[in-house]
Image 1: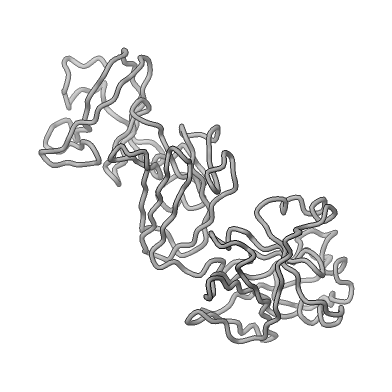
Image 2: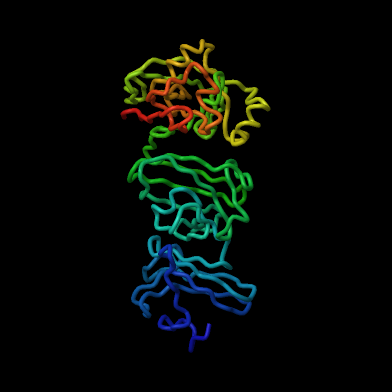
Length: 351
């Protein structure tokens, strides 16, 4: 590295530099060989971090074998953990929550602030945080600080995003098994999935698209759904039950979407199941569309998801073309629609 001797904490050429994500990093040319190291602070041994971010006098050195050439080191000042590109695969969590944890932007696999670590060498990488705001999030695991190798639901390469919900200030633990590429997410005191969002899509008179991620690990055949509606926008959730409106049962259709529907809505090809509302005439449908609409999912005898309903958001596919008699031009309570479909207003349930 160009230092006068080994184990010199004040060596200028071995310094790490803070990047835009608050991570200290540095790339150095090293010959092939086996190495040990620690991260020393402020040019002395008064404070230094070893394996697992340990700064005690008994902290173990970190060790690795290098094939020769450039090697990059990363030190996270929040977790105090250091890694390098020759030590083990660099695994990061990329998702729509990263900016909250110090990254310069969301969906950034190169951000080391959400890197995972295998502290005991058992092939299981871990990351924990209690710094997320309450909400619904998506995540994937990425290798090598880029998108070339990433894994989604069930460890599938390039697979669907994993969904999870967080409660403000509550601990979330992520565990990623390198051998299977499966990411497990454990949330303390999780909020109700889907709450505060419009995740169901009523794409035509007889078809509702429901996000499969809201099922969790429960098979669709073992869950049930109800469409809740309220003319006064009084829907609320308390003590595991929905109140403030009326409900109609929805049925699960294992046959899925038709080819014509997928041609019109290609985004529904993966990640959604089909729910069928009861057969009603267009006048009743028109009345429903003027009310606050949410769908409740029950699984394992408990309310497991509750989310709002949105209509197709294009000027050519909307209530006017799907349900001709439903269009009135007045304010309603669904997702925002383009002007050709009238103006709609979103109202969320009280909790």
